[in-house]
Image (cartoon, rainbow, N blue to C red; front, side):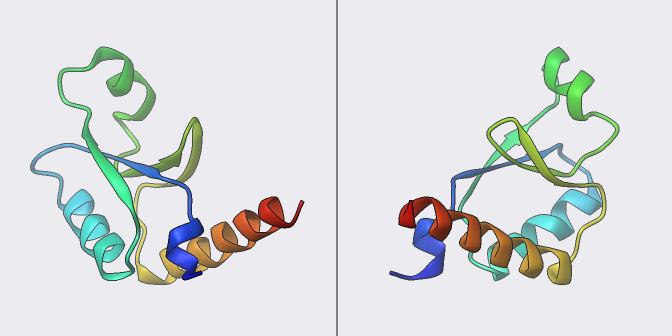
Length: 91
């Protein structure tokens, strides 16, 4: 089973015009992350939670990375997520 197929579905919080968000999204795509992008603009609760921290990558309510993150951090995170998923599968 390819490692990407066992990764959790992630949420990528961003907003239009955010250059850090654009860079982070490009890195996520280059590393074959599966994610849903959510624009926080106009959502008071998401603005409160993430407005000063975007971009934010989360798995459920668990924030994985926020602010500036590049390929190196995302590669390391992916390895950790794969390890966690395999541990859950093996019981």
